[in-house]
Length: 354
Image (tube, rainbow, N blue to C red):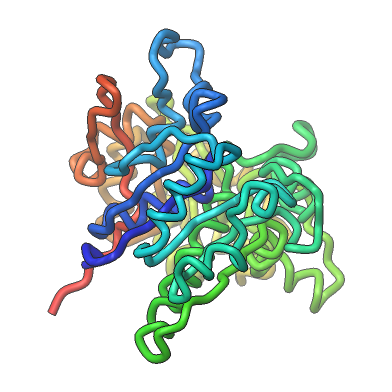
């Protein structure tokens, strides 16, 4: 769909390269410029304990780098810098996430590059906005924008999410901005500067948790997987065969069906479970009342009827179990990078048809 586009990726780590991979999946030519002075993108060295140490490609690096052309250059070198200018002369998009001030120091800021290509669309991901010199890391953003204060439980204390989710969400924001800038360029043939900050992204992603505070002065507390407005939602129960199931019961209809399949209709006689708001208020007692019914049956004995009635209940799978499913296998992209077999999940998973 985007095979006519040329994208220059001057970004590293996760968010920026994730945007570049999105365009490569849709057919664009994506040229990734890596710093040859430090052996390329820093994530090439971010290896887990069980990875091969003598290769310059890590699983982390592979996760957001697929179908790209890799050029190792030194942007402080005038000759290498000129090579980038020549690439940019007929490019459509540049993706950057320079540390504050480095874009100007390396001659790669928007004001300079648009002189080489007035119709260039220049995408920026930064930490705290263009005026801030502060370097940003995902875990710090999770801490400072409230995510860690809500994640975990009373025993664990604040916990970050196991994926750099603020980076991933910022990548989505920049993708949207770049696509709109491309659409605008079709009308006026002009380039544009598209900027996204991790800080703004994090705040925009708070959604209902933000409105719980903004409208009701309610500060969300760390409650594990539990939902502040729905019950039983996020409660986890262990079955007879030791599998963990999680609930997402958002309506009275589903709650009654749940109790019917569990053969626990007697719980409906308790007035404290009559409405969702009452169930939220009395969720601890509700969980204790439900627990014995899950312990009496196996995963298969429960999930068959649950799925048959479209009741929102899921099995908690590890990643081995996730990728044993055919549906997950269909989303895997494979590529040999520098003699290393790599795999990752698609970023563009939408489907468009006539």
